Amino acid sequence: MAIEVRIPTILRSYTGGAKVVEGVGDTLGDLLVDLDSRHGGLRGRLVTEAGALHRFVNVYVNDEDVRFLGALDAKLSDGDSVTILPAVAGGAFGFAATAAIGDQKLAATVEPDRRVFAADR
Amino acid sequence: MARYESLLDACGGTPLVGLPRLSPTVPEGAPPVRLWAKLEDRNPTGSVKDRAALFMVRAAEEAGQLRPGDTILEPTSGNTGISLAMVAKLRGYRLVCVMPENVSIERVQLLRMYGAEIIFSPAAGGSNQAVATAKQIAAEHPDWVMLYQYGNEANARAHYETTGPELLRDLPTVTHFVAGLGTTGTLMGTGRYLREKVEGVQVVAAEPRYGELVYGLRNIDEGYVPELYDATVLSRRFSVGTRDAVLRTRQLVEVEGIFAGFSTGAILHAALAVAHEAVRAGRRADVAFVVADGGWKYLSTGAYGGTLADAEEALDGQLWA
Image 1: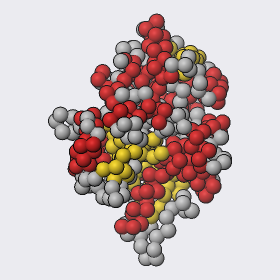
Image 2: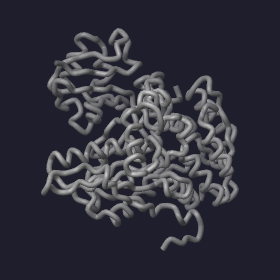
Image 3: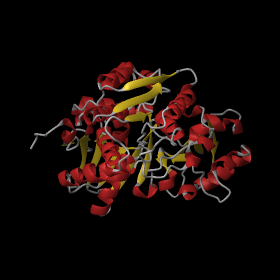
Image 4: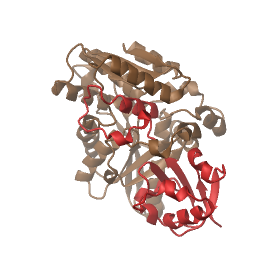
C-alpha cells in the first residue's frame, strides 16, 4: 500500500495532468523526494531552497495541516491521504480586493505585507 | 440583564449551549466529553462579524481616522459587509461595498436594506476583475476609509476582549476552542485570551476546503496569508471539504435544532474530531465551538436538502464560508 497524494490544478503540469498520484515515505520530506523522482520539479515548487515548506503552500495529512504535525518531518503511514493546496483563506475575493487597494487611507494598525498581496500581479 | 441602550450595545453576550445529543458517548466510568456551541448568530445582524465590525469602527473613530459623514469602503459580499452596514448606519457613516455581480440575491437585499451602496464588478473575469474594479474605485476616492479586516488588530481584539472572556465565564472547564479560519480574527483573539487563562487549552482551526474552481486559477506564488495570522496561537488546523461541512450542518439542525450556515458545519466537523480523540484517549474534554451564522443566507443554494452529492455540486466553486 502507498500514500495517496492530491495535486492541485496548478501543479498538475508536473504529474502529467494527474489529480492523484501515489508515493512512499516515512515522513512528508521523504514522500516529496520520492514523488520528485517520478514527477521532476514538483518538490521544488513546494519546498524552499532553505528546506522549509513554501509559505503559500498548505499540505494536509488526513485533512490536518502538517505545520502542526512537524512540517516536513511529519510522520506518514501507509494508507494516509496527503492533500496539497495553495494558501487561500475564506472570502478570497474580499481579501484579494482589500489587499489590492491597501494604499487607501487605511485604518489598520498591522502593517500590510506587500509580498502576500495576490492580486497585484 | 437583557436590556440595552441601543442595538450596538447588544452586540456579543451570546449564549453557549450544550449539545447533549451530538456529544460522543463515553464508556461507563470514563470522564465526560462534551460539545458546546457559541451561538454567534444571535448578534445584531446574525453573525460573528458584528463583533469585529463594531470594534474596527470604534478603533478608527478613536484614532481620528473616521469622522461623522465619512465613507467606508469594503470589498466584500460576506457577513462583514452586512455587519459594517448596520454599524455604519447607526454611527452615521456611508458604506460602499464592492462585489462581483454574481453574488447571491439575499446578500444584495440585506446590504441594501441596511443602507449600504453597492458597486458591482462584472462577473466575467472573476475575482481578478472584481479586484481591478475595487482598485479603480479606491483610486478615484482617496478619502474613503478601508477598515481592512485581514490586518486590523481591532478585529482580533474584539474577540480577545469579548468572545474569550464570555467563553471562560460560561465554561471555566473549557479544554478546546474550535473556530473557522478566514481573517483569522476569531481564532487569534479568543485563542490568545484562552491560552493566557487556561493551562493546556487547545486552539483548533477549521479551514474550508473549496471546490477546485476556487484554487484553480491561483499560482503558488500568488497565495496569501492574512496579516493577523500567527500560527503559534493555534494547536491544530483542519481542512474540511464541502461534503463534510454540509453533512455536519445538516446534522446540527437535525439532531440539536441549530440552523447554521455551512462554515459552522466545517467547524463542527473539526470539533467532533477532537472530541472523539478525547474519548479514545479516555480524557475529559469540554469542546467549545463557534456557530458563525445562521443558515438563512444560504437557503438559495439548495444544499440543505437532497443528496450530499447534489449539495456538494451546488456549492462547487462557491465560497461557502
